[in-house]
Length: 193
Image (cartoon, rainbow, N blue to C red):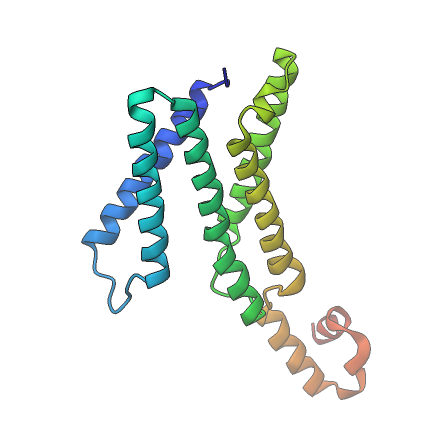
């Protein structure tokens, strides 16, 4: 039997509740001229049809673990799908301007905590079934951590935000003191003070 902790049930229930609230807000609030893309509608339709057919198959035979494994697969697929557009957009724009890194950092530490929880439970119980018995939870944590690392590299290394105050001060410094052009930002700014 796969181990199911009460915190896993609470987390999943919370995720479903928040998703229902989000879908309600999408239906109720005006979106201007934004429309649901055909690709998104297709993905939603395929997921709902797959889930519905699997529930119909599992219901009479009580194959609940099989149904949960199907839902885990859907969750992993949707997790991958939800990250790809942002990673591609950041790459194409060569920028992360207008995008907050805060939730990515929270997601990263949540994925690490999730993985550590599985490891600690496995050590405590003397069995690695918490890890290989719940492959969906493991894959969601790994996929989230990988994409969060990609986003952090994009935000902090590849396309760091520009400090407009420092750039403006440096440009003024270089205009006023053209002989010191190669001194660098810090020396040039301290020369002005």
